[in-house]
Length: 267
Length: 267
Image (cartoon, rainbow over all chains, first blue to last red; front, side):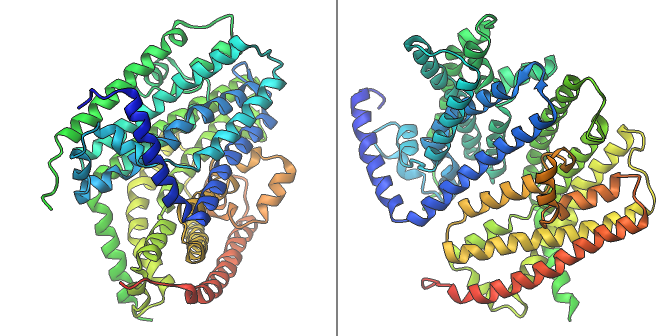
């Protein structure tokens, strides 16, 4: 079942995506309002940061623009989970109503088919806001730019995005075993808001927790060190791509274990 | 006014919220992680300043404020916009419109059961923990009475804001975006994420003439601040009462106008 090539999946993805966008376009007002709502969230987080730094010049050696960098970086890294993996939010309804069974009968990967069905356009607003914030702070910090740095940046962003995807996959997959797991999703999704803080503010116990158990430190802090503190990059930053892939793989396995053991509701 | 029908709704709500114990557990766990994060964040912030007091607030006072604000937030959270939005989209709202009480009252009393439960299950334990951990930083006296009155007014203001926003959904039929905008605006401008004392002067002046600060900020100040005389307290409660009356009138007028918009497709 899993033996079909990447090109086959790319082709299917394009087709499914087109269908979804067509149906979304019939709710244009909803799209506009949701996008504004998204931008509101980002602006509010921005204002919060701004108010804090009106009172305090630095936090643990991190200045305003460095914190903005972390924030912008985290927004971009969180775009994939918002745009491509949004259908995880509906998983519990499908599982509960029994409609999920339809995904089990397709000759393609269940996870792929389920996830590809929805593309959330409002994530694009967040993406643009994140890019704006990152460029602004990049200029204020007077960091140079070269092809190599740019490649590093893209690579770091892709790596960072894996962690939140993994977290949400696991949170969504809990619905295969438990009832009414909306709260788990909401709680897990909230962690993304804490990704923008440097991990050094925590004590050892919570550094460990936010690195290895709820890996939010990888969403912005560790990858950003490559650019903000190039002289003291910890080993965790170097191996973060590996850890990201590992977390994603584990989450995928958990998700699939639930999906395969799913036996429908009989209707 | 026949009170019995309202109290029945309250009781049903209490039983309903007792039913979802796992969700309450997960929410509390998520909250504790949130509190851990803001604890370390503000500790780092205060450590960076060198002085113990910023804007007249010590680290301890800031933490007490934020912990209780979080507890109040969860106590007052009623998902009203979501529920109204779902009713509007599904058409289920017609069944609620034909009940022998006004829609607004019906909604308020359906939520009231969960208020009672969460007040005793989340707010009171949190306040007690704060009381014992800080060795009585919350003093027990006439302020408790003012606090209780103020919480009820705060609750009403919060309800009216939610109801107003829910009514907007009658026009837009889009819930997610409208709800997130409301959440973000209320959280920021009510001082629930950063105490209002930290706001820059100009921004604070704007915030003080808006109703949002009366939701969490007023009750918390009445509970925590030692240096208030009875005249100050009565003024603060008077401002809340003013908002309760104004918002009650506005929501009623708006609802009356908007309810003609309802289109329910069959049913």
